[in-house]
Amino acid sequence: MKGRFPDFVIAGPGKSGSSSLHNYLCQHKDVFMCPSKEPNYFAFEGRRPVYGGPSDGVIFNSTVVYDRDAYRQMFAGSDGFRAVGESSLYVHFPQSAAVIARYVPTMKFIFILRNPVERAYSLYAHMLRDGYETLSFGQALRAEDERVKNNWSPPYRYFRSGLVADSLEKFIQCFPSKQIFIGRYEDFQRDNSAFLASVCEFLEIDSSFRFFPVRSNTGGVPRNRVIHDIFYRLAGRENVIKAVLKPLLNEPRRVWLREQVDKVIRVNLKKPSIAVEDYNMLVDRYADDVKKTALLTGFDLSVWTEKKSR
Image 1 (cartoon, rainbow, N blue to C red):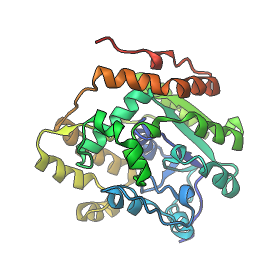
Image 2 (tube, one colour):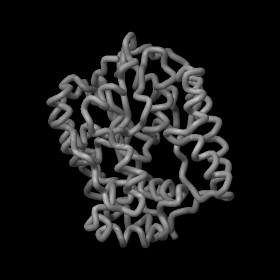
Image 3 (spheres, rainbow, N blue to C red):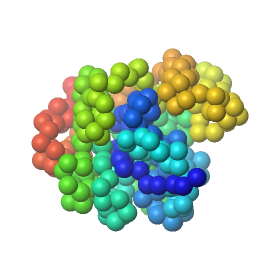
Image 4 (cartoon, rainbow, N blue to C red):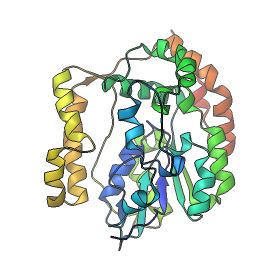
């Protein structure tokens, strides 16, 4: 079958609602979403990633689709849909803005911004959940410079992956404002119906469509590792059960089934809380980036600069 490029991307940052939005849009009758999340093609464009973290072969290098034809083929079944999209972490790869502008100058982008301190800790909890992190949050932050030096992938860069202002600016410079949607995670959480309607209007699809609730990719420490590992594999990219069910279920039903598996995973998780000293330290470290992000977006982000009392 003939492939194509998408016409919109949920571009990150990670742990800010991108997975949930991806799964919501999978339900919409007018939308075709790439069946694999985070192919990150435009970040690498023909180059095989070679990150060197202890689990990077599993969590990053092997998930990137760097071959142009293979990437286009992922959208081969999109004929007849009004909007064709995917979700990748392009905000973490600012060089991808110019690459996308060269290939698809009409591309639309959706960015969901989250309090960077909470986002950093959520990423840590995600890596802890899946057994890819062994240090405490504070230890991992102190180890980050060394990890970057040793070429560990963005999922291990809890602080740096929350610096988004310069990257956003690259996309704003490369594309007209009508092709960029920037929302806040807090608004997505508070009133997701209104948020989803705004996204649909941006994509020029039916904004009255009724979605069923989803909640994806919650982080935390498994209460029972065996239960977590079983259901995590069921929710994973490829397995025998998914291969059998895929031709039998349309995409909305597959999303619903994934949500039921995710519910079991969430119930089995307990989420540790961030230490006050770590939280306040990160508020200071993110201050300049938050200020620039507010100027770029026009959002009042003052709540992101508030410290916690001990």
